[in-house]
Amino acid sequence: MDLNLDGKVALVIASSKGLGKAVARQLSLEGCNVMLSSRDAEQLEAARLELSKEASGRIECCPCDITCADDIDTLIAKTRELFGTIDILVNNAGGPPGGGFDQHNDDNWQLAFELNLLSYVRLIRAALPDLKTNAGSIVNITSSSIKQPIPNLVLSNVYRMGLLGLGKSLAEELAPFNVRINTIAPGRIATDRTAYLDQLKADKLGITREEIEETSRRNIPLGRYGAPEEFAKVVAFIVSDASSYVTGSSLMVDGGMVKAY
Ligand code: NAP
Image (cartoon, rainbow, N blue to C red; front, side, top):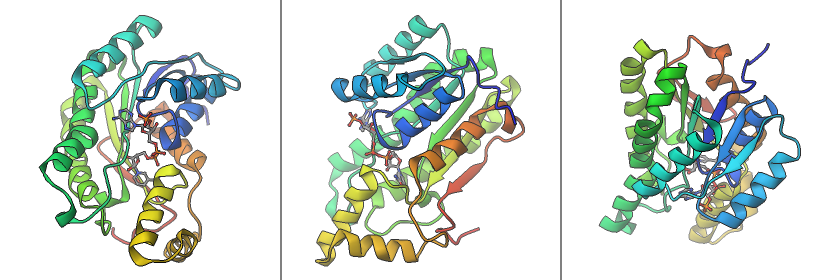
């Protein structure tokens, strides 16, 4: 099946490592020209150089803190300047701090709102003129918490649900322009973020991270954490013409972990 991604311009947010980087790599292997972005300029340039070695398309990068509106405007302007347009927007972010309700003050709630919800809104708004012209595609990366709350991660549980509502609302509003928007929810994909959360849990329970991982694996029907590449291939399919009749949907990539319908 040809994904028909050759020559498309993809803006992938929070892509210096983890899921975002894996998605950027997969899209570039499929022939997309890719704009990478995250805060740490050095790490970002290292990712650009690494991915450029095997990419079919061109890869550029632009540092951006997505909690800052001006940074987002600069990123969009830079993408247009270097690539001319935007066909694909992959929204992603760093994870919010872990912890339960009594561990978060207003500052934490505000930061997580700006990082994990408002940034997606701002990025979509800024990229929309190009996406409408190009019948483009948006993917919002969220979390399994859109189906089932994750213990000790209340900030994710709350704000990811907002993204689900955003995706459903925009699917309707953007369909007349043939712009598709879908939500993708990772379960436990092996990245630094999963290691951080497992360590947090281990510290809380006074056991090792390996013991936490073993318990997690037992709760995943496929019996293992996912690889970032496995996640990225699903995103590549969803943003491509191969899924041209899919919009407003949410898709779990979790090895069967979440039992909810
Ligand atoms: P990760 O390995 O920690 O990578 C996070 C990326 O986000 C990095 O490139 C980081 O670069 C960037 N970033 C963080 N804060 C940013 C900001 N303010 N502005 C711009 N970029 C920023 O995390 P991941 O595992 O890939 O997860 C990505 C997202 O999926 C997170 O929201 C996470 O909570 C969610 N998720 C992941 C899983 C999983 O299984 N991995 C499961 C559920 C949900 P800089 O620090 O340099 O900015």
